[in-house]
Image 1 (cartoon, rainbow, N blue to C red):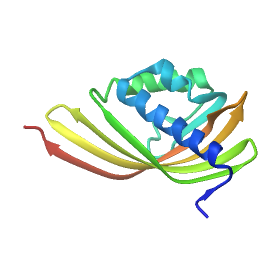
Image 2 (cartoon, rainbow, N blue to C red):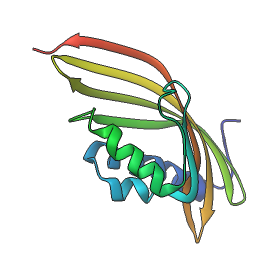
Image 3 (cartoon, rainbow, N blue to C red):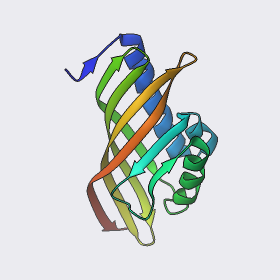
Image 4 (tube, rainbow, N blue to C red):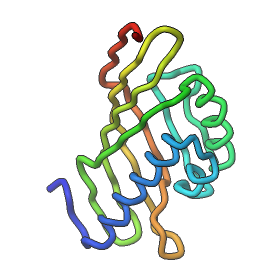
Length: 141
């Protein structure tokens, strides 16, 4: 079953994902950092030059540097599955990104496999693993 556990928790986790997407689109490092647990890790196996980053401060610093290559990004995400068990949850979500690089417009699609934890009444990302699914490039007009 792709959506299990209390509705209120599943809604809060979906809002966590939406807050993350909003932070990326607005290029807001503080808002992005607010979605991660202090001891979180973020793995990007399709980007071996980045690999896995551990700890919220390091994740935010890595993200700030990476975002310099994605000006004007529009980032969307939606869940394919949320499974809650107490104060822990797993989520699979899909992403769609559009941004310009030079004279090209790039459209990326991907998938995250996440674990989330509830701390002090708030859901946060404990681990995120991102994989690329599709990329399309076209000349900008």
